[in-house]
Length: 291
Image (cartoon, rainbow, N blue to C red):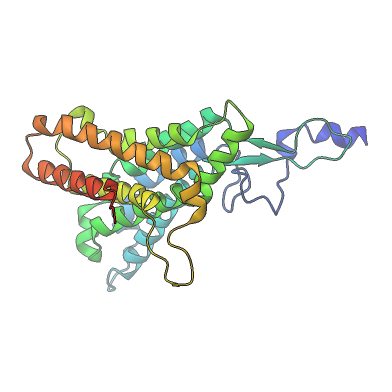
């Protein structure tokens, strides 16, 4: 029906597939078509809520149970925005079509959009979200600021460096010369997480923890942990035989070189200890043991 096909060109009438797990346009609690822009607006609202949260949850003659509950919900909402954006990385669009309609059903999320998604995560999450760590709220709820930040950052690193995400990037590169490559992805993530190597600034406790988590993710790609089931082979065969291990190893080598060249210029004592520790971790991971 030409009339129906014509209507389907209207983006406001687009309907996603329930089976599409890779399409960033089809997500729970996301009703727009640009998660990055929606996330930016959402975070602006959260930043307005935090300074008022104590006042807005106050109930006379009661404790701070409401405050604690709503503070957790606010953190969950913040991370939900991160999750919506991260789905663009390695994502592909699925546009259901009848055989009479022209064009592909599946299309990769553009490299520019995926790069923008990484920039968003670097700016909003991997750069310590200090606005979320209100000292008065923390003092009334007993919440650990380190646990808040570390928990969300670790969860996102697990998502980004999951074998599924990385293999989607490899698959995209195999079918499209203009795809967002796994090497470009890791370089963009590292640029944000290790920005102090360029600025020579002191590395905060939050950032030191994030950088160690990042390095450990790469090390796990080079040397996957031994399987719990002894009948299974060591490591993931998909990871060890794909480009994932190669890229991870190359990234660690390059990071080691950069840390070594930067270390003499770092004056902060804790930052120096941290960088020396990371160097040792990388060196140990790259050692090839001979029989």
